[in-house]
Image (tube, rainbow, N blue to C red; front, side):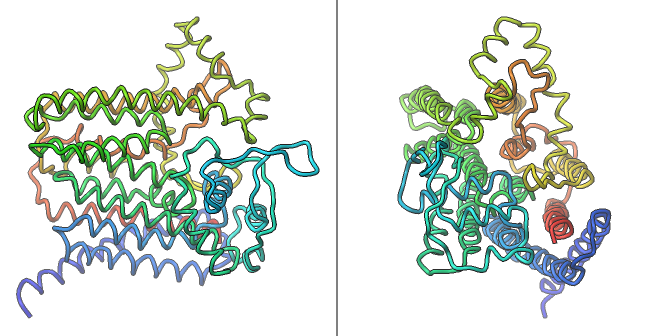
Length: 505
């Protein structure tokens, strides 16, 4: 046995021990939620996540120079666990996402809002199996029989199907559902295979993004394995593809930042990633502004430099056009009644803000006062009906990530000018998310700007934080820091899974 092998084994054991200690602490902290209804099952899952986490650390030690492979393995291992453990339609709006996924699985690019037979109501045509699963929202597979029957293709109708979202965001889920139908599986596999294909796409895009980025690879890894990100990716929600495409766009910016003679193909992929993520969350179209941080010398010529910046106008036009369409169909769901009963009207809201500048300043000066709410919601899981969270985990994670952003040595020293521009773009997106939700979700004149605002909307913004906050004051061993931060990050993912099992099983 070589000395290198011995050192590798010792290093592996040390960090696995650290992982065990932190995981034990998080598990004990979850006892406050415990109902002790399934202690054996919970112990099995605890052992499972420990094995997965330990293997992930070992794999990282063996592949420190291939972080994109590490990201793929971690996301798939923990994500697949979430695919099967997260209760039926338990992720926010997952039933509605499931309906749209099934519609896309039939080959429909757009949705038809039709009158429901023998009724005066309108809705969307789907299949009975999905409505039966929806009736068991929040139940795990041990507490319902709805998952045992074969897939029932009998037509069924439901009022909402996320018709305002573009169809491409549902392609992986739709493929999973199509396979479940093709193989004539039990109904639960509509959910599980849809989640699994969605997770796989997230993992592949993230892995490709990290591989493409010449710098900040480890920072991108830490952001992409945020527990809430994996939780969303391992569901039928479109948030997984939105997060991964946003990170992909940032990866291409990093590539442009370091690479001379930028290729037109790469510019095209960058803008496609911006558009596809921005059509899901319109403020993220502002990621296109990252092009202004690219050094002029990296362009092939002056013409390419000018065209790449003028393309932002096209991005803006696409965003405005899509927003108009999405807003027009948004009310074709339960939201229509909600808007009427709660006096939600974007046009009236805009008029009120423009005619009352003091009122506007008071409302939007609170966006930083509300930041603790956003931090708290980074460990907010499930949907409104059965939401659960951990203030301890969210607080500790923000401390962890802030320390990481401050002291982890970057492989690129960004100048103050670049940091300020990055801060401005990040703030623009942050403000935009809150403003859009206030216009489209809050009652006219609402006192808080946090109506309908959830932390998952801000996950891609975390990649800006190391770029902006990192200092050169700390001289640290990069290898030891990487293993320490990865160990802690894996502990938080494991804690999320333990929290889910503790509360939902």
